[in-house]
Image 1: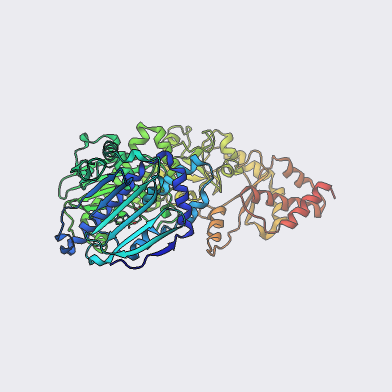
Image 2: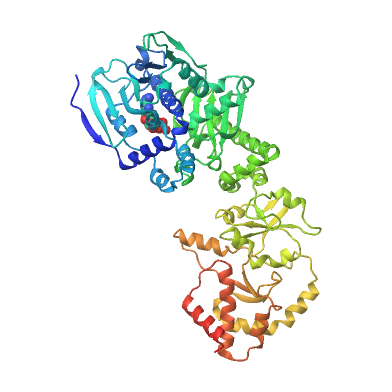
Length: 624
Ligand code: ADP
């Protein structure tokens, strides 16, 4: 019984994505088949899982499979599965809208440069819509497993602005997608071509993919299984080629790019499981990297049956970039999220996953430096969270981090803590670093001048997360990490204490004069052993929060009590001498405040009273 056909408009964002997909992915058009087969395979996985608690769902037809057939006369290519199917509501929800929260942001990121955008769309994952690369009309007919025949749904669209929906009788459960191929896409109406594509991109799919040979162009021939039809991870490593691993990664993640690296292990012992874990080349374009809450990409199987996406249970948050499959022999099939939360077997698998990923990263760092560099650029900042989150692996994670430093060229993060420790100077007992809002600000921090002058390497930490991270990394390889802008520098640099005392005594009058001018604005004024060029800089106590950290927290709405800075002066600097020699009271006040304000600006602070600052600079410039 066919009900009335209704026409609905796509969400504006869907239309935009569709337009982009069809126009920019043309040179990768083959992917549509992989995407549709991957959806069909997911649908079979979902049904098998649902049948665990309701066996009647598959009773009539237990052989889950995917079928492909074509009709040369009608110019149609059909991909059919007998998986879970969809209700009308689900069709509207899944195919007519884009539920992903990052879509808007994704669209805003597009540059208009076709090559770059193609990459981005790949990272975003195009899925079902890729059908419109080769088809000018797509018909999807589906019936949810367990629903009556009369609950069938037909969805149809030419991929422009709208789609039609109608209810009709559908005899078998599952989904059939029929592509009405564009005029010049005849190559997909060919058994050899299709067989080749399935072998190349979908061989690893765990369900049989059966291709129907044509008879005089009509889909009247025999069905023949064309793929391996065994879950990839269950096969011996030696039998799996890199291409197969990559093809599996792509259909698992819908990522367009290759995986950077992977690790595949079968563990047998008190419990048995298989891990196949991938590190992507680039962060995917979705919510994973805008928030820590939404995580997906690690699929839990139990004895080959897909159970659920369980990244959160199987991986710590700082490894949320990892994608892959965990297949356990021992967990109960009726496992729930709650059980996963505190299950001893799951805890073991989780720490095994962590260890395998860290091993893989070690290996990459050692054997494939270029790839490791790519990893650092893509996920280095996520990994840093592990310093705080995973105390047990802190040293291992620290070993994998890379930083910019005063002894490496540019903002490229290439220096490891091992590199640093390996070239520490005789007598140097700390790993020095400075944190700031950016690489450039860190590089130009006045606080590191004297360390630089003495040839001591300083790590330049310019990422938002760094200040927080170093709060958890007090030591590496037995060496203390020290912030160049904090605490007492002369206590550790081994310089002549007597000479310093003398210098401080000689500068006592200017210190006192400046302290008087600045009054409450600073905690105190002192002679610096950090500066060689700049006149002044701000420093903090060992346990004070760095100024840019205070700023970050304030921006995030926290109530952070303002701690007063210590102002250090460089008595050799001509501006300090000029201030010391100034006899006019008003001009002394101007110069004194300027010295503080310069230090605040160099630290990336905003000034409390910019207008007063400008007036001061003007008075000094005019010599009034
Ligand atoms: P993704 O697969 O990345 O979620 P798609 O655009 O490919 O994105 O598909 C959107 C949703 O539509 C899927 O998540 C699934 O719920 C549903 N869907 C697509 N194809 C099928 C199918 N063959 N059977 C059942 N559901 C499907």
